[in-house]
Length: 206
Image 1 (spheres, rainbow, N blue to C red):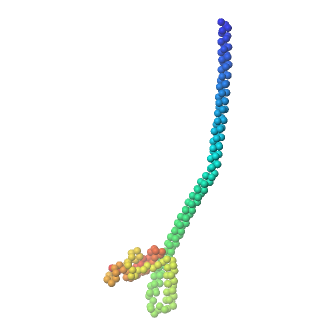
Image 2 (cartoon, helix red, strand yellow):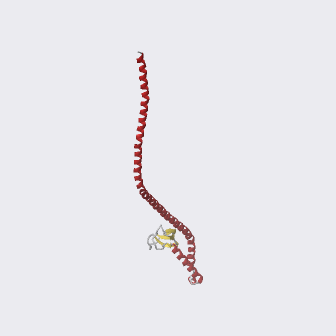
C-alpha cells in the first residue's frame, strides 16, 4: 500500500511539469501567427502604394488643367468687373460734366437775354454804329460757342403749344390762328443735350 501512494505524486508532478510547457507552446504559436500576419499587412500596404503611385502619375496634368480653368475664370471675371467699373466711371464723369455745364449755361442765359434786349432796342439809324456792330459780333460768337457745347434754342412762335417745351403765361382769343398755337414768345427757352435748361415763356391762342 505504501508504494501506491508514492506513485501518485510523481504522476501529478509530471502533469504539472507538462502544463507550463503546453502554455509556452501556445504563446509561441500565437507569436508565430501574429508574425505570419505581418507580411499580409505589408503586402496590402505596398499594393495600395503602387495603386496610389499610378493615380498620382495622372494628377499633375489634371491639376494643371483645373488650375488653368480657375485662372481663366478669375481673369474673365476681373476683366468684366474692370469693364463695368470703366463704364460706370465714364457715366459718372459725363453726368458730372453735364451738371457743371448746365449750371454755367443757366448763369449765362440772362446775359444772352440782355444782349438780345439791348440789340432789339437799337434804333434803325444806329445799327451801323461800330459799337453796335461789335456787340452783335460778340453776341453771335457767344451763341456759336453755346451751340458747339450742345445748347439749342427751343422753337416757339408759330409752333403748336407743347407743355414739355413751353410755359404758357398768357392766352388770347384769336379766330384767325389755330387753337393751341404759340402766338408770341416773351423769353426764349433752351435745351442742353436734349434736356430742358429753360422753358420758353409764351402766349398761346385759344
